[in-house]
Amino acid sequence: MKTALKIFWLSLVLAFIYIPVLVLAVYSFTDATMVGAGISGFSFENYINLFKNEELRDMIFNTLILAVVCAAISTVLATFGAIGAFYSKKLPKTLLNTANQIPVVNADIVTGFSVCILLIVLMRINKDSFIPLGIGHVILTAPFVYLSILPKLKQMDNSLYEAALDLGATPAQALFKVVIPQLIPGILSGFMLAVTLSLDDYFITTYTKPSTFDTISTYVVNATKGSQTEIKTALWALSTLIFLIVIIIVVLMNILPKAKKGAEK
Image (cartoon, rainbow, N blue to C red; front, side):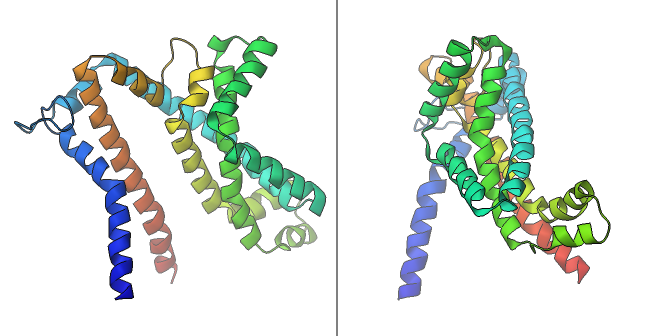
């Protein structure tokens, strides 16, 4: 009875999460003009419009470039920050860990306002230079990458670094050839999380982006306020593609390590 209740509850939660996405995916393959409207036929028109519309293509390209660049910078900063904190004494380690948690629990809108006031208002950095936008996204994503890498450091043997030094490696060689390879799964997970957070962010992007620049999040919000039906339905197709890509990445990240271990055995 308990097992049946657990299965029922889990199924209910999963249905609550995924059914709206599946409904949107179904409508993306139809000629309906709004979700909930009658469906009269199957169509790929939304996907054709998604890649045919130059404005949509530019928006997707801008979002991906921003996400990948900021995620790469965040991953580098967070990796060395986590390693530095891990090998620090108790007080510096505690201070770094606490400082890292503040942006995680802080509201995005507060971070967006803060970055805007500091860089654009006080430091007079030109908003159209992309510097405030890039810094804002790094501030958003780097703490999460840090948290992805920290557990891998805790699982690692503390003496590996010292052992490499004792065997003649320089500090740089010990870091890049011994420590960092142990952290690759956490680094990759953190990078993918940073990309996802950057793609999804709205508030920080809104307050720091150049006026002529749009990401998926800001574009979708503005598009839903307008009356361009073709754009709205093309965004259904975009949402479906993002969902499918995320599923594929998650499946591969879970299958490939197991397949590699099986091959090694």
